[in-house]
Image (cartoon, rainbow over all chains, first blue to last red; front, top):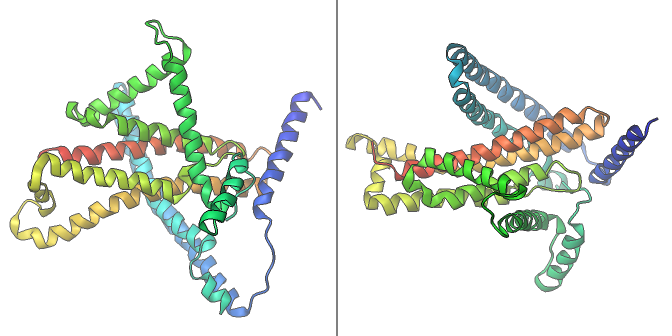
Length: 119
Length: 235
């Protein structure tokens, strides 16, 4: 293996070990009603994010279509059109990001978890 | 979620112990966004000091780069906000540069971005929110309330709740947009590294750089538009 490949493999292993300290947590046993709560959470986050992504895809597709038409009609204005396109894509994307944030809260920072697991 | 081993751990853990002795239980995980804010602040202040030491007419490399950057920012602010909007140039430029550097710093291993935490984003969004209303009241006096009422007097009971909710949604959307983008990218990168660490995270890193620049620009652009909207004459 050449020296560049060795360095990249070593740095890869280094980053992996670095990252895996994140998930070093313990195990606990939970009852069946807690499992059912997690099933509902999994369903809700899966469908919620999927529907949000669906709407975002349609919206951003419309924006991209309009931008392509605009650039095709007037290639000299392509700088301004592309800037406007980027801004509008970011704004539309933020709606999907709102759904993502709710999903992350449900999965990782659930405020009701202590009542379900504790009780 | 716990953090992995980060670069500023050697500051955070002693600081957490010190605060725990004097003020009670402090989790070092809660200090990362503060200490990394200081880190990025010192980084950019250091770059600026290096660039402005001995300003020359024919600039050196760092001074040239910063001139281009700040010149571009000035032109953008002047185009969007007009000449009386140049009062806010310092705030807008600071927001842009801080968010850009913080977002880009998230990508390197060992570094954490304060914008991946809700608190930093919320504080910036609240500053922009308060500034819009204070500027509006200063420029228009109490007639600023006319912007909430709408075009016809009779529609006021309908328009006021709508406008209020719209105005309150602004800092929320600024916060959640930036937080969701940066924290979500962070999380996706971690999960990809755990699943397929070989070569697949590289397009993800490219996407993180792209998103970092665009989110900084969008935050700043929205802040500019809100302040301009508060300053302009009522329709």
